[in-house]
Length: 190
Image 1 (tube, rainbow, N blue to C red):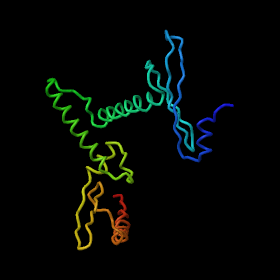
Image 2 (cartoon, one colour):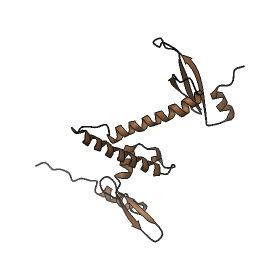
Image 3 (cartoon, rainbow, N blue to C red):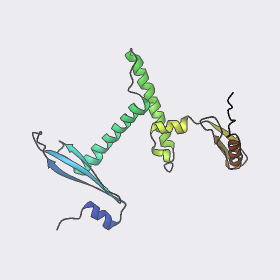
Image 4 (cartoon, rainbow, N blue to C red):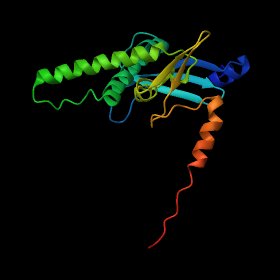
C-alpha cells in the first residue's frame, strides 16, 4: 500500500499548512550525468506548491538542502534585488570609482534604515512586510500635526495637498465646504 500524499495527510490531520520534502534523480538530454533534485512541497487549504532545487550535493537530506541551503539563499537574493531595484543602488553613473563607492555606501545605509524601520512595525500591521517603496511613501513622506491633551496624544496626518485629514467632528463640515465650493461659475460668450 502506498503512503498517503502530503495533500491527503494535511486533510486528515486538518492542518492549514503541511510542509514536506522529497528527492529524486533526473537527467536532461543536454546533461552528461544524472543530478539530484530536491523538492520542497507545501500543501495548503487552497493549493499545492512544489519548488525544485537541482543540486550536485550528495550529502544531507532533501529537507536540509531545501530548508538550510536553498531558502536562505533565495531570501538573500530577494534582499539584494530589493536593494538594487527600490533604492537604485545599482546606478554607478559617476566617473570616479570612489564616488560610486560612496554612493553605494549611502544606498546601503538607506537600505539598513528602511529594513530597521520595517522591522519596527508591529507584525499585525499591513506594513510589516511591505516593500521599501511603500514604506517610503506611507511613513517617511508623512507630515503630521501633534495634538497633546491631558489624556492622549493625537497625530493628525496631512493629505498630499497639505490639507488635514478630516476627523469625525470636522468631517461633515469639510464635506459641506467641499460641496458648496464645487459649483463653478458659467462662462458667458461675448
